[in-house]
Amino acid sequence: MADDTAPKSAYELAMDRLRKKDAEDGVERQPVTDAQRAAVAEIRNFYEAKLAELDVMHQSKIRATMDAEARATLEQDNRRERERLTSERDAKVEKARRS
Image (cartoon, rainbow, N blue to C red):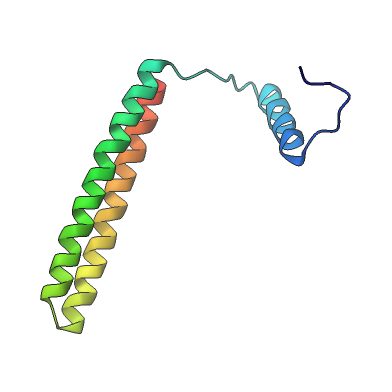
């Protein structure tokens, strides 16, 4: 059992301050259920696979292209698609946590 008089780490002090601020602001902390954890894990696994597939396809296209301008376009398209997938994943994770 932890001794309440023992010195606290910087992390523990910061967490105490955040809990106090949340309580003052009226923010309630709700624990995540097992079903929510499973849904979040499934979403993350799906998007991890999608991002890996995107990387493989991108590398294949890069290897087949010698033109610097075409490579730059491919890089830009890849970055845009990664951002879209990441944003979509984050939105679905947040939705799963709220349900």
